[in-house]
Image (cartoon, helix red, strand yellow):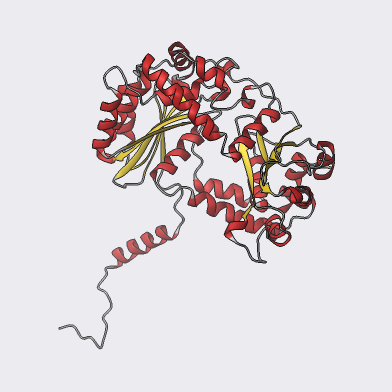
Amino acid sequence: MWDRGRPRRPLVRPALRQSLATTASAVARPVINIPETKVSTLKNGIRVATEDSGIPTCTVGFWIDAGSRYETDETNGVAHFLEHMAFKGTASRTQTALELEIENMGAHLNAYTSREQTVYYAKCLSRDVGKAMEILADILQHSRFGAEEIERERSVILREMQEVETNLQEVVFDHLHSVAYKYTPLGMTILGPTENIKQIQRQDLIDYISGHYRGPRLVLAGAGGVDHQQLVALCEQHFGTIDGSVDESVLKPCPFVGCDIRVNDHSMPLAYAAIALETVGWANADNISLMVANTLIGSWDRSQGSGSNCSSYMALSAAQRNLCHSFQAFNTCYKDTGLWGVYFVAEKQSLEEFVWHLGHQWSQLCNEVTDEQVSRAKDLLKTNMLLQLDGSTPVCEDIGRQMLCYGRRIPLPEMEARIDAVNADIVRNVCRKYIVGKSPVMAAVGPTDSLPEYETIKAKICG
């Protein structure tokens, strides 16, 4: 009988006790890169990268090294038009049949286009990954591009362009790119000009696919409940015959030009603007320090309220001095260049003062930032990175993007170590490198009369 008043020592043999101690020691050590990102490369250059978290759903899709940057003035808008046409029927499926098949699976099919990438992905139950891959293969390789569907989608895209014109943040960033990378593919919009959309034909879509949808520029990413070897086999089955050659000369440099553009409209109650500097591409070592500096500037929105304990100088100034309605620091990277700056919405009478405070913030980053401030920014940056990886779809997007940008998936412990290596001296030096004496680019829409002249702004915030 068990004596409750006298707890007994567990009957553990010495050998087993030693084994348990060893196991406890192993558990106490940090686990690196779990779950693992597995990568395989097919003979035609397609890379398959997966992270299996064991959940019952998954996201699989193709990240393609092709976007509006690979277009010309004459073809600008084709990549986005092509993305729209992907779900409008194939040689073996009508649009209705495709939509019903996805609906009956309980799956979700989506796509988007950026300046350097085009993405097609499906989110489904893990047991349906084979069916999802077959559908992706069908729409990527056997879309019909029927004349009737093209005309219908042409109207849809033209309406979408009208909607984009009402999103003033997108308008400002399109203007910002148009002056920062003037007369280059990065300066063009993703949707393209109206005259191009009205003229795009079936052969333009086919030519874009044959020129850019090639093995070495394709990454099949999978996250959630995915088996790596199964996905490799499915990719080989459905995409093994895709052209494995690639023309490396398609990516042309896009020189940065420091200047400004102002669309003055006194009928608007607020001004929408962005000021930025040229920085570096994804893989440049300075990018981590710029991300920390970007976090130090932060963001603020009047509608969310704020107290006197804001963590950033800009947020505190905005809250106390009514500098703006909102602002957000951004760090937009491409392969070989980047735009690092601040987007803000303000009343006419506050524009000049906001710009001067921004100049003071940039000066602080170059000369006065402390290790305490940098430490807080690093913790916030790491937290934001982790929060953005909540679910199979954001993880899948992270895998696909990193495979195209870095050529590999950077493990979180490695990324955290890189962030931890940044200190105040490094932030100051990197900020001086990209701020002091440089030429900014600015785009503003609305009542912009009170904004100082470009040369005055340049001297104040980069002098």
